[in-house]
Length: 326
Image (cartoon, rainbow, N blue to C red; front, side, top):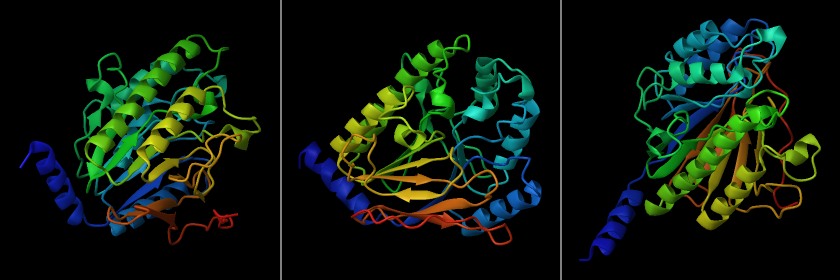
């Protein structure tokens, strides 16, 4: 038997025994202007722990844009992450660093805050949580070693990855000293990481790919005709990779604080919908709830997302279910 045939047989056998599992995601919390935020957050954590997902991802904004991006806040959130009984993976949001220059929240230097985030949350190639798991991070990619927050992992053959794409136009803010240069370096690293993630998925014959980031990246939602400038190159690369992959891709993000499950996503307003791309937006801010995704590697869709509503927390207003065929 040739090596190639042996590899194919091994991959097929692995897929045949792949079992369904779930993961959870949340973002844009805890915001301390929310009434009774401590109790609401504890109930959310307890509910996710009760469900025992394979892992949970926090999609950034670990405090509101009106709160200081302090070391104390970072350390408190890191302690919270470690109360999850399973792996907790985190990707940063804009409140943690790009917007920290605002005088009302301490007037921090954004790149100094980003460096502290990396020190506090990403010192090792592993998740947070009481039972952390090993991750593959971009620190091993020549030329992009400092982007330690970009991570990849695989469960039951499905490939998962975080990408450091944030709100505030992805830090393309020319009025802030050094921001444009920081954006250019991170944008190039994110695109390189995206391509590496899909290369891994193709090499392992993965049934699906799930990506996690903080930003709501689609410019038309914000009134732009097409791409947000800080998202354009990344989204063009995403569109190319998703189409070439041809299998289900799930994009999970935070930012708008509103639950949304959209199929056949059009990456820009002037583009044809991408049939194999689904996006899932988390709750956030006042709505202390999560999302949960059933992953079945053997199914045609692979990912079946839905809201994770926490008993005892005020219910959010859920959007109407969109018909993808309309």
